[in-house]
Length: 294
Image (cartoon, rainbow, N blue to C red):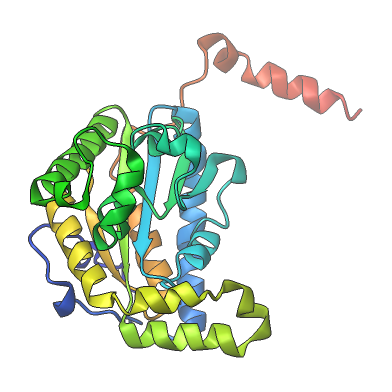
């Protein structure tokens, strides 16, 4: 397959999600897409080795999407060939009591990648301008000074939160974290089919929750919130990519392609040079090891 045009998915100007495709298959079969992903994964794994040796950048991969958008399987398939010790996956659910005793970004700060490693956020700090905007009553449990009632959670509150998120991402980017943000753009009909599959297949029952149906009724509101969040926070140092997610295999190829093509632009990521003394004695070390088999 020809190289994926990643600029087709990056948000560089205001986006209307209703006008963005949710389906892409590149006119390829599932097996062809699987092979394409396999090839990209191998290159990502090679880059990861060099990234670790270089030790100056951390890679943050943020995944957002409605329920059933395919985040879990994408993580499994895209990062399969990378060294497991260099990839940490964090799934952010309802904040714990400890997390609520800090500001809302705290739990994300402490999960940021070490230099030389990848961190994958399965749901992210954007939940704080998505689910909390759809259900603003959740904000009250954060015990924020000056926010005592729902009336205090106004447009000014959300503008401040967008600014805080932009500041957070700018800060980490300026200190060596490469930020990727992916919105897995799923159609409402495809979500219906995936929810039905969870109900039809016994092995998928555990994934289903009646709450999924309640949130589905708020689909339009979620799309409004996603659109606003993406438009207000897609920056050069922390861009959003809107990825068609109705075809899972194609979505994985798109995400993997964006990661690889972008990371290859970091020409300073190189393995460190050997110490001069070690370099001068490489042949001697080789001879010592060769003699051991005699």
